[in-house]
Image (cartoon, rainbow, N blue to C red):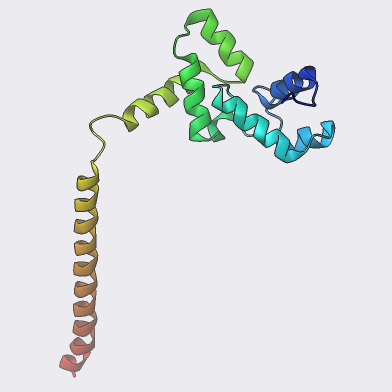
Length: 151
């Protein structure tokens, strides 16, 4: 089924959602008269196609993790002037992309604790919490008994 919207309007809206413009869906809906839900569905479709469409007025550091990862993936094969042009288009700095890439790599490294390690750490934490409560109760008892001995 063909969209009732003009392809030029779709291209304009995609450009307005994309960095560096990063207009919010609400702003675009007010100015174009297109339903907000329609804009969200378009944005979702464009993201599934692999395009970087945060559609938010937030600074790049406040983007969602999926938007940051999409930017890292899109810029993965770029270097030099191509990377600079990519960053300028989207309002990014190459250092941001490098940092986001490192975070993504660290998240999947072997140094991340496994589920069993996490469960063991939680179990140890619960034991320490119980021990702390027990020691606090003993301390409170000693504080109550100590003034009686002085008399």
